[in-house]
Length: 259
Image (cartoon, rainbow, N blue to C red; front, top):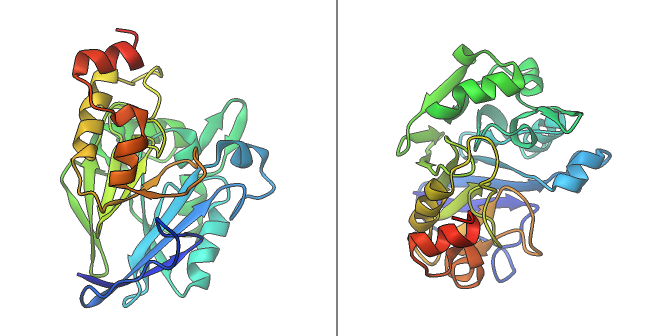
């Protein structure tokens, strides 16, 4: 189990440092906001307010980048400045603001720029592999497909991959030591859109119910800063997020899908 959580650009829920004695490995976790912490000159990055994450093991110096986009070299540089080496990437879903590609007439830098700099595996849900390839131009053979429930290790740190369809067919979240990187499935306020190609409101309902069942103390780290705070505990999100308010499936679909 991890021992120390080493965090940059992040304030723990309730404020203060996030530090705990938990075992033999040092968990490295960095949250960076596009347009503020990196890609500061990119108007699309400032508008989209994407979060990118780095998760790693301080004792081995290895880290994975989550959803590298906009200014990928800057993200790698920040991780390396912390004494870490990027050894792979995790993809929450295939949309260009998370992996690169064409977005509203703008070209967003993403996975191709990462792979041009460092030859590393890119991990995506199996259903997203052809979509990531289509948007980014990265050959499907260079992407590693996973199923929900798979676990990855970086150094001695274990990351569980949670398949959470709804926003896209292969959306996934990442659970590491009581922290949930929730991509565009769950925001602190609301949830990901379900009116886009490949979206499914019914699947989103099921995915949100699953995430809402995580322990109260789980720290939620979303894919965008659509709320004043960059993170919150699950009990706080559950009590304030209208998308998680108790309602049956039919009620939820009437509200969120017009069903």
